[in-house]
Image (cartoon, rainbow, N blue to C red):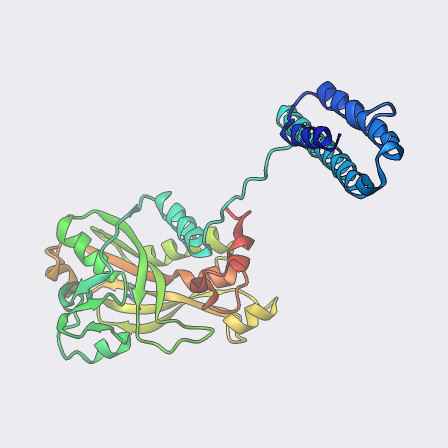
Length: 339
Ligand code: PHE
């Protein structure tokens, strides 16, 4: 008898099926009202006393094995059913797609590029690692010129002729060397200066410089172009050109836009004046034209440079320039809906 039950245990353990009816039949066979277990328990009273203990244990073992098998098979079956119905439900919403965001620097750069493209400027780019000629000498800044100090340059230690460009005017030199007027080009890019990092300044930032060279270009053209730009960019056309000095332009000016003082960030960024300095400009110095192979007797032109980071900070109310290079996704994700 005991051997017979042991055979059943082995059989129960081996048993497997995926069909619902087979599981039910299996359950009825062992655990049902008239099942084998009922029979074995009924047999208990006929078992000789000295075998009762062993018999009881083995029947319990069979009951446990049968119950566990039924539970396990049912679970597999239920999971399968669930999996199938999930796969088959075509009305189920899809997994959400994570949409990336453009960096605020790119947003502003694209906006500026668009504005100038619409009035006939093309885009030119150049290397971030420059030589002395394109960053300084060609731009009327010969060696030992005191104005070189204004630029806080990072030099390559082993070769003072190689440096990280301090402005994208270097790209304009390259462009003039390779193209004859009329020239209308803007040069966006990253530039480097050895400045102390704070909420307002960083050792690298982004610029867009513009260059216009043709016959009879005047300072009035420069002013109109800048006014058009600020109107398109900020919806504000109140600008101020403050006399300034750059070795590569004469006359030179700083460009201020009247921004207003509506928010705390406005105060912070404009130092409480409401005026924001966005860059520099001027009429290209005849020496620069000559250095780049353009005849200053025939042509004249203007150039300007604006800082992208500062404009981005203003437009998107960013209070600290360092946020722009820290790549914190909580910051970047906020630009998802911006174009
Ligand atoms: N290159 C200047 C700077 O980075 C900006 C500038 C560009 C000024 C063109 C005048 C004309 O400071």
